[in-house]
Amino acid sequence: MHRKLSAPGWLLWFAASSCVAVAASGHPAHEPHVHGIAALNIVLENHDVHLTLESPAVNLLGFEHAPVTAEQKTAFHATRQILTRPPRLFALPGAGCQLVDSDIWMPEIHSHTDGDDGHDHHEEHADIHANYHFQCSRIAELNEIRIDLFAIFPGIQQIKAQWVTGRSQGTQLLTPAANRLKIK
Ligand SMILES: [Zn+2]
Image (cartoon, rainbow, N blue to C red; front, side, top):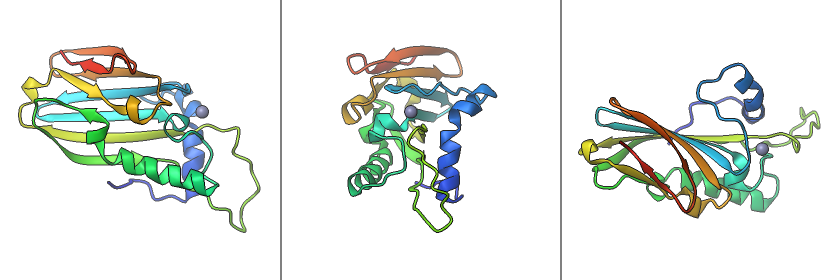
């Protein structure tokens, strides 16, 4: 539950807003920023499952600027709390999986200070990234992953999922009506 970055909020916000520009320069596995669509990358390796969620912030928060009102700040913190509890977001049935590490990246709250240049961020976009690492005692029995994100975040309409194991790989478009990702 730690964040790797410790740069000032403004810098983080800027970095998030630059995702589209970064994509053009070949950021690995970076999905275009399309509202309503999120990307999920899953890697199964030995006893480990690595899940990476990447989503426009609007899908999870309802907005993409730094939170300003009390309501937005509450939504921001609530969303971060939900993201730190992956059992509510994903089900890995029958494989004895335990979360061992997670890393949530959200745009920092931008507070106005004396040095603020009055720059307006309302036209910009921002992404949220979350990485989860599970270890599974019976990973060979993992046949599907159920994605419960749709029920929690109605702003997510589709998830482009990509998975890879030591033996095979695949892609699947997930929706609220088809939220089971078949592995194998
Ligand atoms: Zn956007």
